[in-house]
Length: 469
Image 1: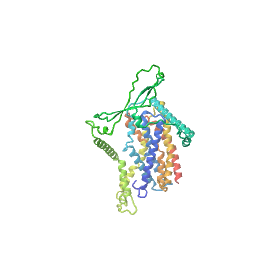
Image 2: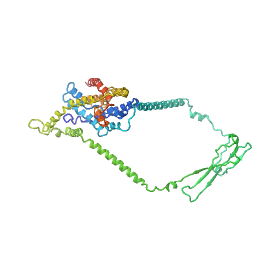
Image 3: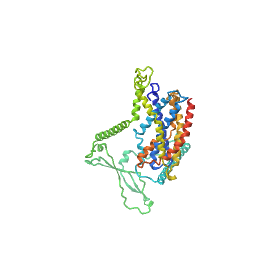
Image 4: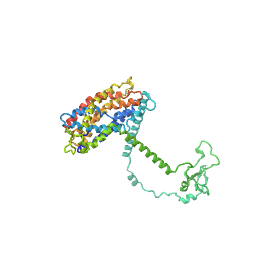
């Protein structure tokens, strides 16, 4: 990273971080879609999301990119630049998985009671049926509204055609007449009992919180006929008036706080203090998790690579203000030489860890416990669909100027990282959180992806080189 990054190409860090987050978002969407439409073991529902988000951005792309950029058609020094660009992807991987708490999603799978396979499949089937019914209902309602809107006559034309009929007398009463008219029970010749309207205004002084009680009997009640019911009507009819109690603003102002209850201001301050304490705790935890060898090395390397006097201490720089040592090398060149020597073992060690992780994987005993649909969908999504979207995204960013068109190494690295399988780091994390040291549900997902990787990465590399050169 120190020899590769310069003030001229340091602007590539932004696009690398953005593209890394986009790739992780695409993996998240892919995993959520698979989980909604295919059965996934109960102990692997959150693990599927982790498998979709975090891809292998370590050993496999490092080995491939170093070998390809070290030869034609790339120039000399492009391999160091490729490693520097890969370190940004590794930084995004590390920060989102550990400091931001992505690894806790794996631990969530092993909390709570276990579910039987049949029970989980039945729950998924019911969920899919309910959603299909809801979609069908929404489409049916939308179709009915479309048809009714097409057949509905113009409302304005109907209003124009209708003319008010002023010859019909209106038997209307003013509000004062209605309020002053008493309620009288009348019986006509047919035996139908009618009820006219009256209003009583009852005032209770000295009673709180009720200021006024209005007893109103509505005249909208239909006439009562003894012939309309199956039994004879009683001779005496008792009418129960409707009592409407209206509360005023004084009633609400007289409301006193309950004894032992905190005032609103005190409760608000306590909520704010607890929220600020929670936020502070999360921030401190995030900062503590950043204190690790990879992040410390990257944070130290950035200022060294960008500040010319500091960079001249480690590597040869044109017009460096730092004089060389007696051997003709920069004074601290031996530190960088030692780091490069030790870093050369990262690729074989990474491949050894990959083989060890794959060797520990065990397939489930029964075929019914293998989610074939989810496994095939995840493999196709990460190794076929994701590379296609990655190439389109990178080319789109090149057209809008977000990625430098002349930076061939940057374009190749961003394209290549879009087609990586699930990270083998999840194997170790699952073995830790499972409590049994096994990752039986993860095995069927990893093996097909790494088997298909040899074909997909070869095709992606060939297409990327053909597009760039």
